[in-house]
Image (tube, rainbow, N blue to C red; front, side, top):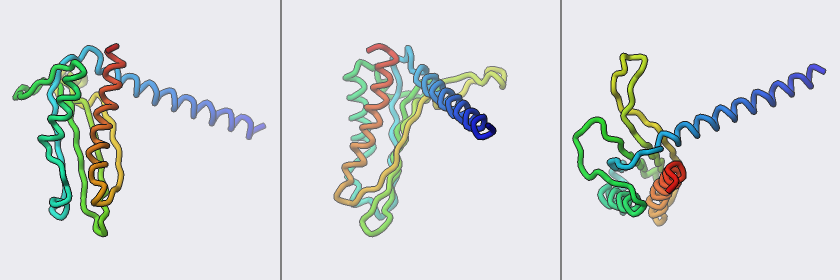
Length: 166
């Protein structure tokens, strides 16, 4: 009987946790609703040993992202110094681990101006949606990193379009 009650409790707790996670994802995605324009920022990082193998530049990736978003009807802000402009930030980090292996991590986040209600509505920028992935490739497969980064942008765009019914 105790096992039955304990199993039932575990199932309910698991369902509650899954439900909470689902609500968090939905809340995060809904922060994109009504957002019509933003800035794009890209940061690529690699160690010196990887320089000769890294066949990508921040500018090239940023232009591809801006074109993909612009083609989808999103107004891209090209330059800004304003602190309250939403922006999509892509960060790619890779390193030469030796033996021809290159581990990488990619994160993408949508930053938006928010008010800190517990701090007298002080304005700040915060990540309202994010995603990421990690992988490992060999030198001859470095293009997989670029493709993976653009895949993260496609994921963002798909969610954005679903939320905004485009």
